[in-house]
Structure formats: structure tokens, C-alpha cells
Length: 169
Image (tube, rainbow, N blue to C red; front, top):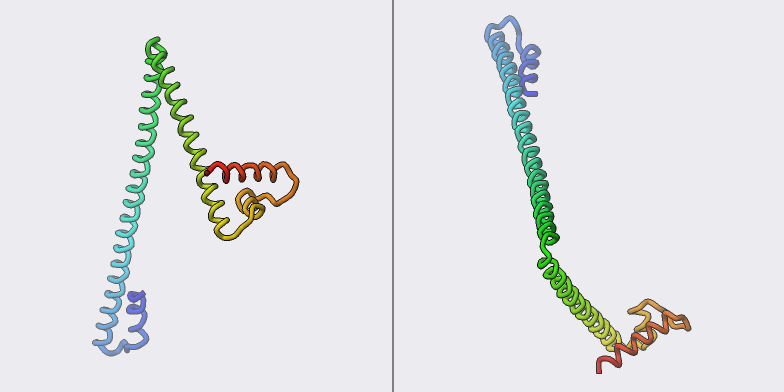
């Protein structure tokens, strides 16, 4: 923009009859062209830099995809080899059955622990609501979301409430 301004301004300000003015017009014209060429050079440099960054980002993305695909392939091959080894030997089958039995026992113990934790959390919530002065019906509504009535859901929630309260002592 400054190059265009430098190029257009002198013809309207200076007179062509004065040699100094002609010289200044020439300098303004040359400097305007110089600004235009410098701007073009800077724009080309920025374009090359952006192109390089785009290529670099594409290379990084390709490497990540390749790494994920390689790790998935390797893990699949390992699982396949392990499965073939287990099928190939009878003694390994027995070990596998034992491991499965142990893992099912561990899962069962974990499920029991989770159920106890859930009951303890419910008891804690009931005690918090009782501390606020809530009655049985309001506690059942707050925890189970069931209003008082003769429905089966309310009776089940009431039985669970009684079991939790009686079970702590």
C-alpha cells in the first residue's frame, strides 16, 4: 500500500518543469516498485513456510496412524499366538480352567464388595436425610424417587429401606 502511495503522490504534488521535482518523482517511482517487490518476496516466504508446516503436520499425523496400526497388529499377533499355544497343549487347558475359576471367584468377591459399598452409601445418605429431619416417606422419595402409595415399587423400596436401617445394628 505504501508503494502505491509513494508512486501516485508525486505526479500530483510536484511540477514537471523543475528538475529536482522530476528526480523526486523518479525516486518515488523506484521506491514504490521496490516496496512492491519486497512485499512479493515476503508473501512468497510466508507461503513456503505455511506449506512446510502443512507437510510437517501431515507427516506427524501419518506417523501416529502408522504407530497405532502397528501396535494393533502386534497385539493381535500376540493374542493369536497365545491362543494357539493354549489350544495346543492339554496341560495349559487345565491351567486356563484354573485361572478362569480363580478369576470368577475374584470377580464374585469384587461384586460382593461393590454391593456392600453401595449399601453403605445408601445408609450414609439415609442418615444425612434423617439428620435434616426427613421422615421415612420423604427419604424413600429422595433416594428411590417413588412417592408414597400402595404400588409394588414403593413396597419394595420400603422393604429395602427397612433392611438397610435394621442391617446396620
